[in-house]
Amino acid sequence: MENLSSVAIIKSFSKLDHKQFRSFLTFHKLRNTGKMYRIYKVITRNTGKKYDENLLLTQIKFAASPEGNANTARQNIAMLGKVLKEFLSLKKYEEDLFMHDIFTAQQLMHRNLSAQLADHIENMEKKLKDKNYIDVGKANEDYWVNIHKYNYLRKFQPLEKEKTLETENGVLENISVNFLSYFLLEMMSYYNNLIIQSENVKYNFEKNKLYKIVNLLDIEKMLKVLEGTEYHLIVSLYYLATKLVTGKASDDYFRYKKQVYSNLTKFSQQERSYHFTNLLNYCTYKINLSSAKNEFFDELVELQKTILFNKYYISKTNVNLTHEMFWSVVIGLIRNGKKNEALKVINEYKDELPEYLSECMYNMGLAYLANVESRSKDSINYLIRVSLEYLPYKLDFNLMMIKNFYELQYKIEAIQTIEIHEKTLELNCAGNELLMERHTNFAKYLKHLLYKYQKLDALKEGFAELKKLKNVVEREWLIRQYEIQMQTVKKKGYVSPTRIGIAN
Image (cartoon, rainbow, N blue to C red; front, side, top):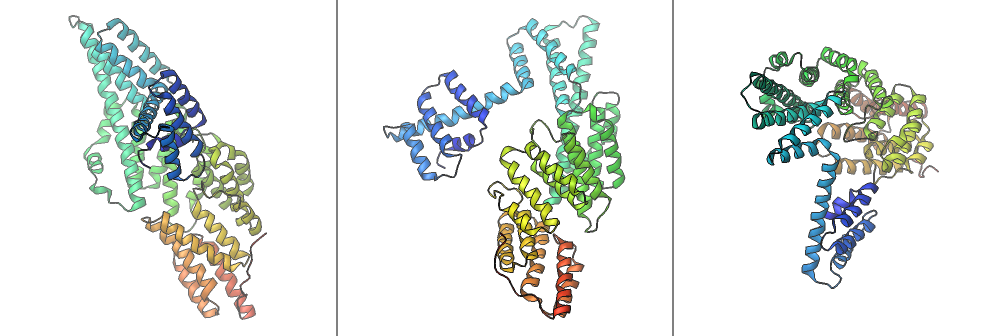
């Protein structure tokens, strides 16, 4: 929309953000506050629902300049955009106490306020010691506190005494150790993400400079330098995680898992979340290697339960249960035959999800459980309560609808939903070849049952092709439908005719 980045920012506001922004406008008594507030109110009133962009633009222009002056309207709209960005910056500054302390230290140094700087550095050190955990952020904070301490010593303390020089060199050593720790932690974290994301999209990560830099370093020698320091433990863990994503050996996984579990109380929420994500990614990788069930199915479910029941999903950036975790736990428990546990999670943890997804994922969970139990009409009734506007699992939604319609022998509806599913794939999954192949194969072989295979020989031929394929979503269910159809043809000599209608 023309010059209206403000709309996107305001749409992202929570109720608390709206309250704080109104106070911000009033408190700062900015020029043209009244007109900016009118523009803000127009946007807030209209973006909570579907809206016509041209009509909204007209309303905003009128609020910006009721007298119809185009130049004044542009100035006021641009001013609101600038004020919104200042509000976001100030909000972040007020929330991030460490950033606040760093900025204050820089200002005290710049103004040559040595006594005040000494007190401020002492206060920063105390805050750091009060943190009874270790993580990447603390390593960074430790580095910056020692930087300011070193600068203070160099600028305000004489170098005549040997003790002062010794203190200064000790601080310099801390700076180097903390910088090395933070540098390795951040680099290995991005390296691991590079490998995982590259595998998802078939990108050749070996040509990336980050990959080349990491492989030039002798991290094991660096770890020996860090022995005895506060951050040696997590740097060692990040190194194990790096070996895990590159080597993929199960022994590395269980070694890493043991280290994580035995040190859980030493980590911040953010750090715990990072390590459990690595463990989950590895289990998913091992599961995807084979269509047959292996030990990592149970491993994945147990990990997810540990994360869910202990709220290890909470981090700095996320206070809610993620829809990914909720959905994975529900599906994992159901597939492992633990339906009562799954129902308990669906009922008790839906309110831990973000509010806009709570009812949506609740009904998806109940629909999936009903679908697996062949209660197709119940499953459909849950699915029709799902708001597709917010649903992150449209492919799963489509698959359940297709399976429900097929099991009820509503073949026309099944065919129509397969067509919707294929369009969803084209729109949302282009570029993900593995996912496209899995779902395309499902649609292809189910359509054969619906359209083509009416004779036993043709059914057997399609069945043989399907059994050779590994990359098919809902493979076991599809194989079972072929077996049922072959049995029907053997008994009756034909396939039941299409019934038209939908479930009540």
